[in-house]
Length: 197
Image 1: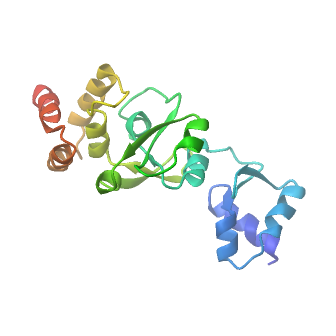
Image 2 (image 1 turned 90 degrees about the vertical axis):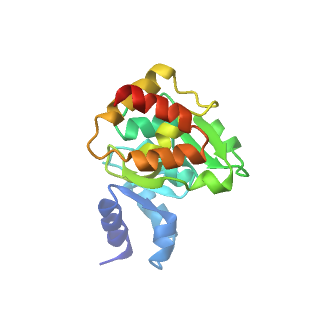
């Protein structure tokens, strides 16, 4: 199998995507990516991210590759977990406090930053609607984040998210209140859950 075929096969396995980093790991020169672009078999989506031309672009996946330190949060996380029916107009990502957010803001991302000790709290992975894996905060972390004073999630949307969560069979109230305590929103979380349960 030649290098071009290997890269096409890898892209198909990755739901249509291939990154220059993956190509380097395989020991294949990145010039082969340029060759596939010239042949019209792949196109450059973001810096270092390529997609087969006959595949649908997964913007969330592309953004995750572009902003590796970004974790989907707040309204976008609610959408990914099915806790809201509102499709986000802007993707919301949380970054470490010292991260330069200029490029993220210029790419129409709603940005939050947190101190290092809370950055990975509740970090998990989820599949996008196109079945690509992205980083996201857990349901419990997301519910706590939307209760924080700087959150731009409306109180109506927060109430609906908590209603949906309260009916879930796999809800984890212990984790919810542990995270709420760390993020200092335990009283708000308790109030929501007492009303709904």
